[in-house]
Every structure is written in C-alpha cells, then in structure tokens.
Image (cartoon, rainbow, N blue to C red; front, side, top):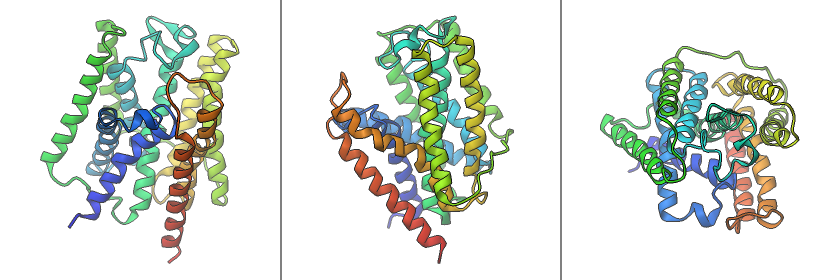
Length: 319
C-alpha cells in the first residue's frame, strides 16, 4: 500500500513543473507533455522542490529557508543549466538581453527570474502541498537516504544535461560559472540562518488572494513592462531590488500556523489566477513561435483543481 507521504511527495513533484512551466505557458501542452521534455522538467523542478522541502523538514527550518533555497534553485537553473543569466540572445529575454546588461550578466532578467523561481517554482508548490497534506506537513516524506541520493543524482544530471544541450547557444566565462556556484553555495549556507518579518495581512481569504494577484501583476509590470518603456536603468534596478525585498516579506506569511490554511492557499492561488486569466489569451490572441493549443483547457483545469483544494482544506479545518 502506498503511504500518504509518498502520495504527497509525488503530488509536489508533479505540481512544481506544472505551475512553473505548463500553467505559466512557458511550456504549452504540446511541449510540456513531450515525454523527454516532461522527464527533464519533472527531474529539474519537481525533484528540486522535493529536495528543498525535505532539507527544510530534516533540519527543522522555517519557511524563510524555502524562499532562500528557492532563490538558490533559480540561480542554479537559470545560471548553470540554461545560462539565461548570461546569454543576451536567450529565447524569452527580449529587451532584457541589452537593457541592464553589465559585465556579461543580464541583471534585470537574473533578479526577476530568481524571484520567479523562488516563489512560483518552489515556495507556492510546497505551500499548497503541505497545506493539502497538513497532517504530515512536518514529517519526512522520503524516508530512505538512498532514495534522496538517487533524487539528487537525477536532479544534478538534469542540470548537467541541459547545460550540455544548450552549450552550443552560449558559453559563459569561467568567472561567470565560479561566481554563480559561489552564490548558490552562499544562499544554501545562509538558508537556515535568516528569517523575514512578514508584511501582515488581516481579513478574509479574498484579501490574501488579491494580494497574491496584485503581487504577480506588479512582478510582470516591473520586470518586463517598465524596461520596454525605457525608464532609466538605475530606477529599474532600485525597483526590482525593492520588489525582491517586498516579495520575501509578503510570502513569509506562508509560514505554517502564522495564518489560517485558507488564507495560505489564497495567497498562493492569487498569482496563479493571473496565469489562468492569461491562458486563453496565450492560445488565441498572442503571436507565439510555439504551439499554445490547449492553454485554455489547462487554465480551466487548474482553476477547478485549485478551487477543489481550497474547498477541501476549508472543510477539513472547519471539522
């Protein structure tokens, strides 16, 4: 019989790439469900989120550690695996390959993607899963150290495979690699030593949902909208760094027992709502180089699943 811990682990492993790549439309259905792509995304996002979650529980760390480790994950994926931090011609980078590029680094893109992965790829999937499986949220889900080592090996192999496959596109310097690895190790080192005082939100779940929706909207405006309007780079840098600080303080609210479960879920669902709203726009109204067919269905499916989880958690907490 499959244990509840195993079910929770599998749920998280599938949820992380499904949110970060599929729902966001970065990898629409035609790409996401390609067997090879799916395996790579699950090994990278899913195993990355699971490793961070297990590391936190095994070391009795708080949710602030997830945010810092999520940043480390973002730096590893974008700086080492796909090298988008450095490649000015990266497929999705647009104007950010020139705007804010200094010393061979796409700084606005790098900070923005670090924020994105920390919250969207790592923190929100973990928070949703642990809220849904609240009875085992403080327990180890992968009990065998050998299994952890296998998961880590697959995760690092994914990073290496992507780095090799994309080497033909761009070659960062050795200094870039060393600086990136140093930053990752630094973030892992401090992850258990930092905590953030959250920006307090009081009121019904709709206020938490709205806070998440506004956060996601402002993220796109600051990270991608304002650069295309040509604002001075120094102002953009101040804004994006300030937004990074605001983000960690806002999402420190997800710490268990700090707010009610439904409010936690609402703060998670808020950003994902923007993805759901944009899903038919990606399919029918935007010109894309890939095939966005099915994005409307994906958005509707996620809306149903998230509403189901929200109602299920509410029913359990009211018993």
